Image (cartoon, rainbow, N blue to C red; front, side):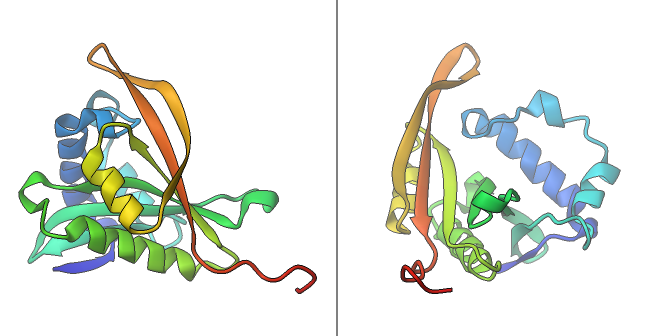
Length: 175
């Protein structure tokens, strides 16, 4: 298993995996299959260009993309110390093998290299016990819950927001 940053030539594989996730795990994402199924491949390729500012990583089993995770960063001055996870997904055939943990460990390690980033957040659908258990085992703690955050096929889902420190905060009075 190899985890690496996705590049423009991975756009087609990413789109296929992303649409699979949106179709098979609809309640796990804020976006929907219907919203993304017609996204032009050129748009996705541009998102993975070196100067795009996007940080999307993929897990490959041989040549097959089987998992993805994105790492973003808040941009406003007062919140630039926070990074966040987005678009975490592992294909059903590769679940239960520790791949989600590997992807999250990679995301955490990458976020720790971002200058000034001290905290990482993630959102997860309430009821997704496997994901919540993984995030808790990696040190994430729930700090908020939005009731009825999404409606999928007429059913309401709460969203849990979790957070964890990446590095110790500097002592008061130091630079």
